[in-house]
Image (cartoon, rainbow, N blue to C red):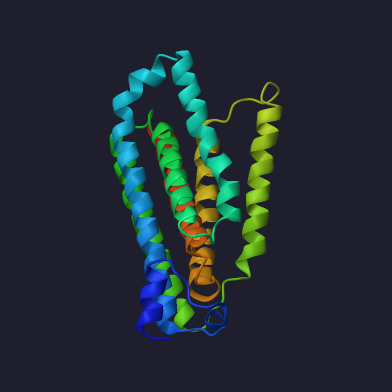
Length: 244
């Protein structure tokens, strides 16, 4: 694969289908750089939303019909956008447009989730998230060079997510019959979820290095972005629960 193939991948124009059947270190590293560039832009957008959303705190605190409608739209938008992103993930540049819309909506959702948190907790959680994500990413690259395969984590992580989802569904359905979770239980739950998504960082980074096709940059970016955001929000939950 020559420099032309490298530039083609960077611009979103894929090499012929037959060329993708042969693994190329140059194309793989170009793909990895592209994914991390997308993730970096997503995280910058999210950081900006977390910083600026508190400025409109009064708008949401007023609970006017417009505020409620905006809140519901912000929460539902990422869920609605997931489906078209999955089906159009290889169609350039539509996939990048959908990725941008998803990132904006998700960023505002994260910003809303941080509205009631102290600024120092947000900064500490962001710092811890950076350390965790960078550390796990470097470890996964180191392990991949030694031919370690993390695909076995997939079923365990999926089962863990299913259990956590069922737990919250049961809590929602029987909220009137169950006592509210105390701060200790909330902290433990947040720690468990953070550990699960730390596992996803390793799993998704392993997929990025070895298994994703060169045209799967949008799905690879979304996976790593959501892993990082979930770790951040769960660390925020843990720190807020332990904060007097």
